[in-house]
Picture 1: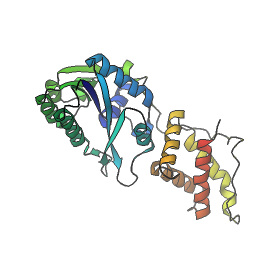
Picture 2: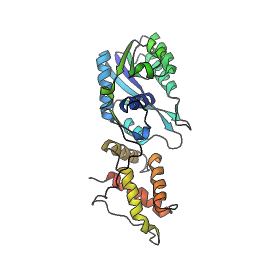
Picture 3: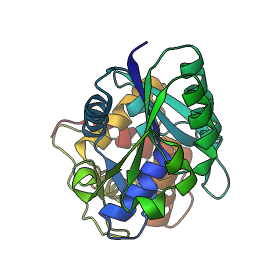
Picture 4: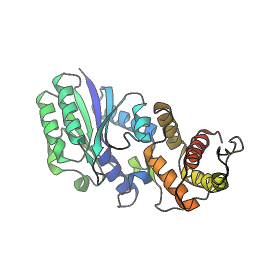
Length: 283
C-alpha cells in the first residue's frame, strides 16, 4: 500500500530538541512545552515532502511512569487525529525502557502486512537499526530524520541503513517547543472573579490556611500555557476528574510547605478542588 507512517521516538525528540533549542543543554521534560498541533503538522508536511505518499498515521513513542501512568501530555497527544500513542515505561532513573522494541515491532509489522510503502523515522538509537533492516527486506523505504547536530545525536550505524536522511535544525524546532527557565519564580496571580473561594467543611483550623493554598495553586498553574492547560483538562475528563500525579504531588507538597505541616483531609480536598476550578476557569 502506497502510504507512509511516521514513527517518533519522543525521548530522542525531547532530549536532542531541547539541547538544540536551549543552546546545548538538555532540559528536564517538566520544563519543555510542546506545541502538539504544530509538531504534528510539521511531521505530516515532512512525510509528504519526503515521500509524496498519503499518511497512514503518526506513531508517538514515549515512556510512562508505572506509578502515575500516562501524563497529561500523553493524553493530549493520544486524542489528536492521525496519531497512535505507544508507551513503554520509565525506570527509577527516569529513563524510558521498552520504546525501541515497540518501534521495531511496529516498523516490521507494518512492512510485513504491506500497510506502508515508506516510513519516516525520528530516532537516534542504534537499537532500532534492526527494524529498519527488516522493514527494508519487505520493500519499505525508510527515511531517517535527525536533530542537529545529527553526527552527535544519532547513531552512525542507524544512519547508514536509511534510504534517505534529513536533519532538522534550530529553525525547524524553535516553533515547535519552548523551554521554561528552571527555578523561574512566577508571581501568584489573583483568582478569577468567576471562581468562588471554597471553605472546607471543618473551619476550626484548615480554613485559616485557604490563602496559602490558593497561592500555591495559582503559582502552580501560572507558568502553564493554554495548550498545557487544555491537555490537563482532557486528562481530567478521561480520568474521572483525577489530577495527574505529576501535578497532584507538587500541589500537596507545596501546600504542605506553605502551611508548615501535613495537610488534613479537608485541606487536601480543598487544594485539589481549587486546582480543578482555576484550571477550567475562563480568563
